[in-house]
Length: 339
Ligand code: PLP
Ligand code: COI
Image 1 (cartoon, rainbow, N blue to C red):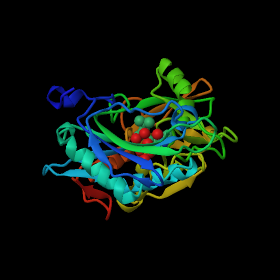
Image 2: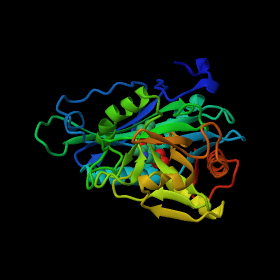
Image 3: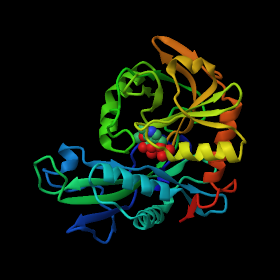
Image 4: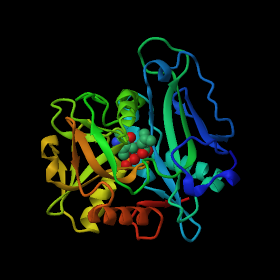
């Protein structure tokens, strides 16, 4: 699809083939020089570990068009570091932070026409990934790897953007207690496909997972982190070794403290105490901030601020976060990398 035929106002979160993607091979112990290519099809060995043993990880970050026409990347160093941790967990080679950020810039520049305009609410979503490839059959790390980044113009991930959505507590787990929950690896998402599909069939936006050890504490949404606001204005978010350490979550913690003057509590969020929360939300790169209207647990819908209105603290957090990302609000030092 050419960028000329995109309706920026109705963009959702769907694959669109953009012009160029970055591709680099790891062979003989080193990353080869990366190139931009028009071909969106990978040709890999049938024995690739990514296909059989889930040896792969990915990232998600966005490029934003600013009012003055410049382009912002939001905290790409954090994505680079998280991808390095995911690679370590799955015995894959690190992509150096500098190479990661340089590759992001190249992809954004090569697809500049696909960046949604300032004020449209959309952004260019970058999807970096590392996969184990090459001839292999035993359960072991791959002989070769591919690091690639492609990009897609996107709008809202959940229906309506800044509109309350209902979520349901899953009886399945997406990760094991000492498993790969904190790594951004495909296996966690494969495990979430069936629960997520069941949730959507029942008209929920997605499911929320409890801690895999005791099933008594909220961990996260299948595609975003969880936060809540208490009656006395505290920002609460789960802390657990099986939750993905989200960069949006981290940024909201910092903005809630430094800009909104909120007390932040990272810790256990017991499912049987959720009625104490005034507001709740899902946060992530794709989700941005999606207000949670209600959570269904054991066939009862626990409603937070409202099923239709967005709570005042959630609104302030949204304004601050999206303002920083698109350059309308001054960013904390180091958060914005200009393309
Ligand atoms: N949790 C899960 C399972 C996710 O897929 C994501 C999305 O990346 C997040 C949390 C939020 O992470 P981030 O804010 O870095 O996008
Ligand atoms: C993201 O927000 O970047 C995600 O990875 C969430 C989802 C699309 C898997």
